[in-house]
Image (cartoon, rainbow, N blue to C red; front, side, top):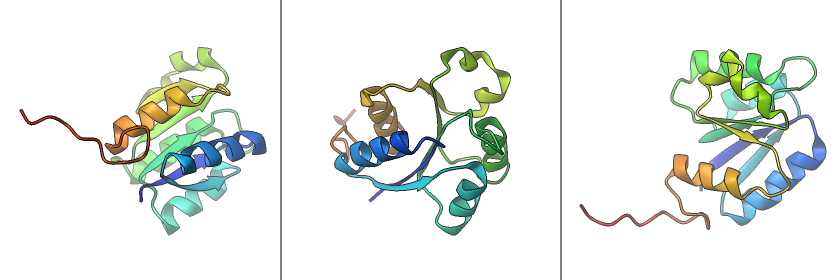
Length: 129
């Protein structure tokens, strides 16, 4: 089972993502801030991370840079309520930028794209070439 680390200071968002992504067949770990996320990445390396940008202490852009410095191949999706931050140069190191919404369909589709699964969490069948 693929492991996703959700990093967000808003408890409601963490809970929403846990429910939605667990139902899609992923194991979901949660971190409330950047420092906790860094510890979790080192202890049990996830297959993908979602990171909020605006968090107290270490913001998501700083967290992104620190994770990228050690784990260049780890897919990272920025999830922010502030769509205008997509133009911030610091976010360009992420693999994708998604504007937060109560509808997590776009996020689930992007995760499936990176992890090679369909929306139900099963391995996607691709036609032979």
